[in-house]
Image (cartoon, rainbow, N blue to C red):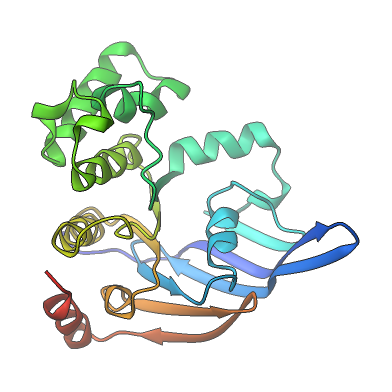
Length: 247
């Protein structure tokens, strides 16, 4: 499938996020301008406290900016109420976290199906889609296991499946390989790359690993809440990074 990047799917315009700690103010994001095209794969790097997670929370409709605009498919999500934001999160965005964030009392099947329960799907549609996604991540035989009965790599694949079950246009991956061994981490990266290249899913990945960052088409570096550099990666550079990622 040829990737289509006809227009920006995400635009941040002069975004600031200020938190108040007592009488002090912390400027987590400071005048951020960024556009992400549909079907693009970008990585975000920066030291702890640079604003990476705050940026992801803004794009993911988990938080709203103090100032500025965030456009998702042309809609300024900074102006929406919590109910509308929840609908966008459920339909357009999939989240993958370093800590998996699975429900320990639910089975693999139930964890993956969970996001569909908050949308307008029939029981038959939920069953069909959940089974399809479990097959995609090769977890059909673990459908009725609890997360505690899985390896770290399997749990992250459950998290990936849960992120995909609503067919999101955008996946936000916050250190998706952080709790995995290097071999399993590379498998997860290969799966994300396949989704990006074959299904045109837009991926924004936060990572501290420079080699993983170069899997993306473009790397954004944050420092003190500002974008301080932006670098595009050639096909050759990306292939070299994939080859040299530890296994």
